[in-house]
Structure formats: structure tokens, C-alpha cells
Amino acid sequence: MSMAMLAGFFSVFGFGILVAFLGSIKLKLAPRIGADDAQFGKIVAVFQWTMVVMAILGGIALDALGHGLIIPMGMALSAIGIFLISSSGSIGAVMASCVVLGIGGQFINLGGNTLLPGLFEDPSAGSNLGNTFFGLGALLIPIIVASLFVRTSYARALRIVSLIMLLPIVIAAAAEYPLLEGQQFSLTVAVELLGSLVTWLAALTLFCYVGLEVSMAVWITTYASEMGASDREAGNVLSIFFVAMMASRLLFGLQDQITGIELTPVGAYVLGGAGLIAAVAITLMMTAGSLGAAKGAIALAGFVFGPIFPTTVGVTFQHFEPAQWGTLFGVIFAIGLVGASTLPAWIGKLATGKTVRSALNILRVTAVALAVISAVLGLQ
Image (cartoon, rainbow, N blue to C red; front, side, top):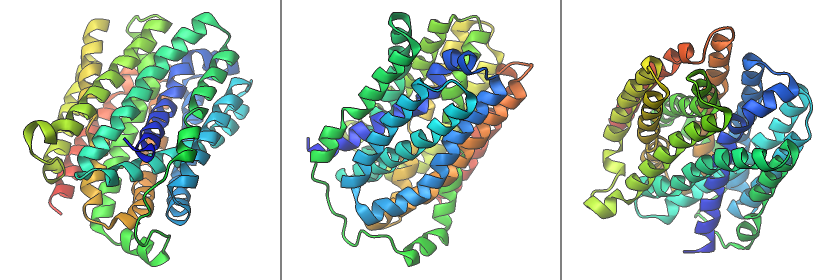
């Protein structure tokens, strides 16, 4: 395994940590800064909107500067963002810290998700296998945070997480990255990408999916609390979601070796089916009569969520040259993050004075829309 591949794995691993980070610390952070569900939703929105902007700017920077600069910069900024949150005592200070966190997060997201597909013969399989590490990061952080909160102070716990984000920078800085032929930002290429129907279908698919995933990552702990879970158990319920997602991505990443069938050509069927089953899983969450039943529905949701993002990336990348992937990924992920910036905040608004469980219908409708849009993407 090359150092570049390791850097890619650590990048998506770190991004998994960041996606689940705010949800993992929400039950401690919100009372510390006096934020209700609606205000916490706005904090998440600041993080996501920063990444929307940086998806475009970061994609341009990646095509211009390459992985060797963008990935280490992302790791450093992500660590700084978490460190700043550890000492933030107000909603405004946390929002400002989330801007730094969003910049760093988008750099490692862009870096890892454009590097790994090109290192494997089947882009979808490579993206799924790589994003298994995203699931691992998102899985481990609630467990790590819950354990640290028992053993040490809030601030010290977050600073340990900051150090975890920083450590892989040594590998990222030392790696030799493949130089993609013609890799540089081109305004003409960007315009061509924006004029492609495939680009917009992929972007809308990610709008639905990223909004779904981030909403689950942010609100599962609160949902579990409503179902009778303790603070620590609520963190473990979030881990169930990411364990299922990680297992699913590992399975789809290796399925070509198991079945001999490449994932990319049949990706649209995978996406459409996953969207429909996700809608069923969310319905089961809404109607669960016990915490045990809720855990089962969450596990099902995590499993069917697993292949959606990496398979969308792989199916989309096959239509374009690798030298365009940085700008392309930035464009489609920026639209995806609009979903992540609006859906969790919308849930928070509807849940204020009510329950998160009552607001999940938003996600059910979004899952159905994802199935329809991805089916059209597969016809291109």
C-alpha cells in the first residue's frame, strides 16, 4: 500500500470524524453555550455552508495545487477548528470555529475522494472501499468522545480529538501523489462541467444524500434520547448507524472481487434501490415502539446509506477525464452540502417544542427523491 493511498484513507477517515463530531458533542456542547435545538441547527448550518463555499474554491485549489498541499492543509485546519471549539464559550465563538473546521474538512474531503478512485481499476469500488474509512472515523468518534467525557474534562477531551486529526499529517506530507495529466484549473472546463446533465443529476443526488447523512449524524443522539437512551447510550446508537454504513461500504468495495462484477456499470440500480429502502428505514424509525426497534431501523438506514455517496462519485467520474475530477467533485459536492446545510437545520426548527422523531418525514421524502433522481442518472 502506497503512502498516497494511506493519505487518502486518512483523509476520508478524518472527514468521517468531522461529519459526526458535532452530533457526538451536541449533548455536552449545547448546554455549555446555551443553545436550543434550533440554534444548534444553525451551528451545523455554518459548518455546512462553509464547506459549500469551499467545495468550489477547494476544487479549484486542488486542480491548481495538487493533493500534496491540499490534504496536509486540510488536516492542519481541521485540528485547529476542533481546538478552537474546545475553548469556545458562546454560540458565536463556536460558529466562528466551525468556519475553520469547514475549510479544513472540505480540503481533506476533496483530497481523499478525488485521489482514491483513481488508484483503483473500478472507480466506484475504490470510492466505496476508501469511504469505508469515512465510516470508521464517524463510528469511532462518538465512542472516543463518550469515553473521554467520562475520564476527563470537556476541553481536554476535544483537544485530544484535535491531536488525532493532526497526527496523519506526517504521512500526508511525505507521500508522493500521482500527477494527473492536464491537472490544472480551467474556466472552460468548469463551464463545460456546469453544462453537463450528468453533473447536475449527480449534484441533486448528493443534495439528497448528504442532507440525509448529515441529518442522521446530527440528530440521532437526540432521537435516541427521546426514545429513552442515556447520554452515553445515545452515542452508542449513533455508532450503530456508522458501523452499518462502514460494513456496507466495505462489502460494496470488495464485491467486484467476490462476484467478479464491477460496481460502476450497475451503480444506478444500487442507488435507486438504496434510496427506496432508506425511505422504509426512516419510516420504521418514525413508528418504532421501543429503543430496540429504533436501533434496528437505524442499522438498516446506515447499511443502505453506505454505498450511495461513493457509488454516485464512481458513476459520475466515469463520464469525465481524471484531470477534471477536482473541479467536478467540488461542483457536485457543493450542491450536496446545500442539502446538508438546510435539512438538519429544518429538522431542528420543526423539532423545537416537539420531537426530532416527528420531523423525520422530511428525510423520508428526501430518500424517495434520491431514488428517482439517481435512476435518471443511470440512464445517461
